Image 1: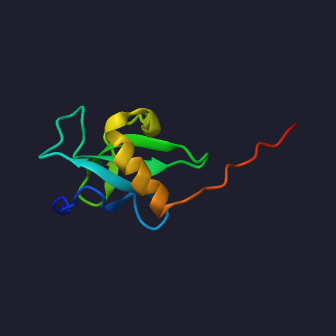
Image 2: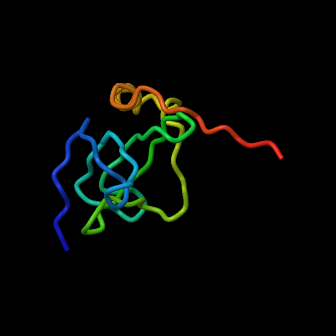
Length: 103
């Protein structure tokens, strides 16, 4: 099992195995995960062009969600994540929302 990579605020990381993982920006780095909060807190831009804040934990191979259920927050509604939202928008200016097919 590999040690957790050194990351800093503003670094880019990939959620899940590469290739094909979701890119994210590091907002906060913690000394260690505590079960509820992960090793790091990140912001990523989802497929609908919304910034999402979520905790990640290093599993020895890649960054993974700290909790199995989706529990992220809309990062643009959280003041302490505003710098990371801005940085994520610089890295990934716009994602095209998927259109739903009508039946």
